[in-house]
Image (tube, rainbow, N blue to C red; front, side, top):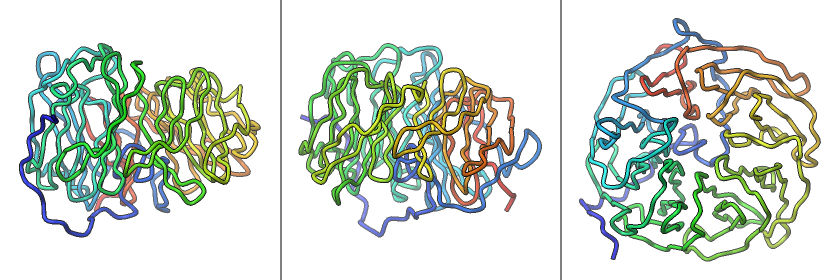
Length: 400
């Protein structure tokens, strides 16, 4: 039986999230790409910052934005046992509300990570926050608790002493949670209104930090679930398994990305997969010079980008895997790159964002330092870039 606390169902209403919102890890469709045309390219500690607010504690989660509100998670207390969900006004940075919860699962983790590692997801009406303690919380946009699940109560052997990090993603009325670890491993589709499982599949018991992705191939939307030996595709509504692609050494930190009818699967090398007419993928190319480190790959404007452990931004033709440009940046990078208006944004762990213009003439157009440790991936919404550190949440953009 699922052990969850239903607080009440919200009245169904049109979704408040818009195309310009950044509603989950790497944006609404998980690509890391924004269609906005007025995204800032230059800022510093003292210039170009719309607002900066202090956070109560640590976190690697990205902020998510919908309907003029910014949601972010954090953790505090002895051994990170206090879990926070915060909401800010996107225009002013004013804190609208904060909710706190006690952790029910273990809090052991690597020093570089924290219990607020997974990025929350929002549909504009509600925010869904998963913590590395395996506590899953649904709040409405005003901070009222809708439901709460302590997943370690349902699945008591779930364990990862170096920290959980896979982010939940939303697809229609299904919240997808991937929990692969040394104990009970599974991927589940959870009813976003009630917190109950719609479907669940057991997975191999291996530690894994990647985030699932929904992509469209051959007219069918599939949920891509990446594990060390297999990339699986499911129907995100029913959980039916559609196909699987098996290979060795699939990455357990950087997540796959899709674009232009291809999947870019990180591992010992980067593999370019091209689904056939039925949607099952075939290997199109292997990029031996495109291995990403921690950051996930990015597909943008017919090219695929990866950040190496040496801090090199590699650019290759998406169709062939041929490397066409390499740009040396200063790493290391934990945050995944994002793109907007012809630029790729790469934020390193020292809080410096390199803005790289792509196209025929690839070049660094700006190097922007905040002098603050940043491990979470940036977000874009409303003509602004959002960055979070353990101490602060930054909104980069013109003041309103």
